[in-house]
Image (tube, rainbow, N blue to C red; front, side):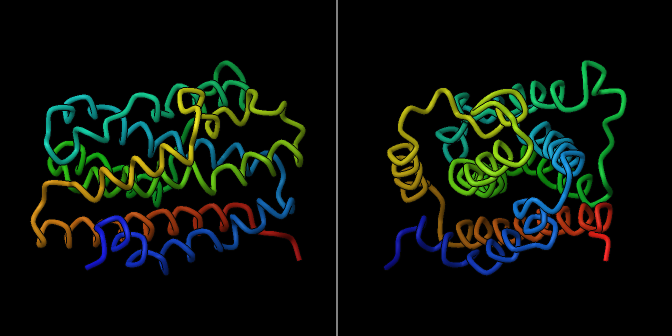
Amino acid sequence: MDSFSTVIRTASQEQHTEAETSTFMSDLLGGKLGVDAYARYTEQLWFVYEALETGAGGLAADPVAGPFVRPELFRLAALERDLAHLRGPRWRAGLTALPATRAYADRVRSCVEGWPGGYLAHHYTRYLGDLSGGQIIRDRAERTWGFARKGDGVRFYVFEGIANPAAFKREYRALLDGVPADDLEKQRIVAECKKAFALNTAMFQALGEEFPLSA
């Protein structure tokens, strides 16, 4: 029987690939969009992580979610520093969520507040992605728009509290494999992972509509 971490990864692979290969992300990573598109994407991430991290402390004692509430993963402070660099000190005044982003953040918040297994699903799709594919975005952003290496503008992708990302991911997967949930709850968590990727893809699609490439 496959481990739970393997089940999650394989079950959501199609949705994961769809998110990674969205037109907006392909154009952004390909250097076809300007820094304003990158800044707008960073703004959208702020709404998602504000929902994911605000209130997460209340899950610290939960047997399912608690082991995953890891402050070294939290991204909100880094996002705010990046936005101050990208948009200036008054960045909050112009901060707006796309409707697709609002739907994503609302779903995340509802899980944080009422379903530890759902929180785990969104935790997995966000943070493991940031530790892995997020590093490609950081590298491209540094090279395309001239940000200092691991400096302001890309701090969201820099996990200063994690010295060995590969070892951390192994530990994370071991925690997944030991989640104290029955088979039905695990199926619900897997389904929520798929939903998380779909919500993320919808956000990318909305960003693509806001930043279409000129013919």
